[in-house]
Image (tube, rainbow, N blue to C red):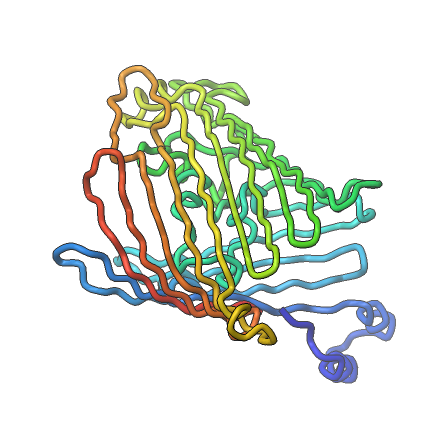
Length: 380
């Protein structure tokens, strides 16, 4: 991300007479600045098995735009295009606002945030630019357990706890999930409202407490709220058909070594009623996590280089039917194990070339496959 150069700002001020702005308006704008940034990624994937040719795709193109009105007041937004284009009558593709909020800072301890925000759960949901994670695709755990990218509308506070050493927090009141979108395979993912004419029948509370030191970040996060959306079959109360999610994560970089770990548990209070109302096989509990280790090869062969060549190994285990309500027959194919081995080459810190090999297995031994992936990503 970058700020507009002072020369551009000066040129804009010189054109004020032509725009009809008054001198006092010009003075008010002198302390303002606008930031433009973004990220994107292109993927090539090739799965094993018959009738599975390689596929290439512009996976994401995202534009970040923010404006600081003053030292205290700022606006931030992200607009995302997935899969190159959106065309009527065709599957795939999405144009969506990923974030859109206004910050008002009272102090380092408290900033009021209002708008479309990212629940601060896990690692990937908030920090998912391609150079920030290993692997061509984001971890599958961060799709089926923590439904990234998860975004909803609400209000909250963020800041650093006074007197602490690197302890910060985020807490929001957001619109809730909608149980009609839950499924056995994808858990709560389809229940996200994503800021589009979102129902506020079941407001939810989410938050995170994180301790950050040089090279180390440890965090815990939660979500709690109803999902009935005033469906009489599920309940009319604020917290009816409650969803409770708790997660913990850690990131540790020491010398050429990098480690990550995430675990999460999702409880759905009355999955039996959801299945009766909508004919699904939704589990009453979803659970899992992953561990990842990486090593920068260039630290050994070219220690003076600012470039990085990370070799990494990640293992994910999760089950979207870890717990079952009455009447549901377990599908062992939903107890998934995914192992990914790969390389990430970063010629500069914000550009990455990636390649990995992935083995996808499950407890049932059904529909298992392997996949080779290549990718390039950037952020600025």
